[in-house]
Length: 164
Image 1 (cartoon, rainbow, N blue to C red):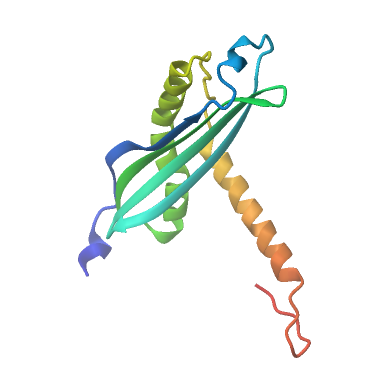
Image 2 (cartoon, rainbow, N blue to C red):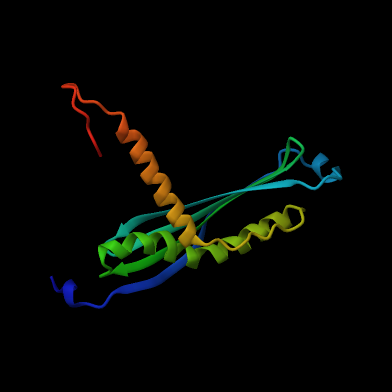
């Protein structure tokens, strides 16, 4: 195939809001609370092939605000992008999907989440920048640690130790 001689391709085809949900289980009473809510934020990234050379990348953010032990609001947003990725060396593909694509998508998600929270009647929550390179490295380390822990205790039926 002629792919060997072709230039690497990394192009954004589309960025879109894939999913957004808002829950306010304690409204309207929560609006009368004087105490400021505590905010918890969870982040996840993902990627999956759509077609040959076409990948959908996603960033999911969950923002939970609590006043004492009551949930004021919970917002979960998933922003996605479709990227054309061709002729990228295999060792560069995973970092591109774990760092490059999320860096493109995240600013859109930040704006969408801030908008939903404001429209819900709460002061805006401005999400901080995320260093997806550090996030990617942490995920790799956690995966390696998990593999190490899972692989350490496996003993085969014949008594020999198996390693991963």
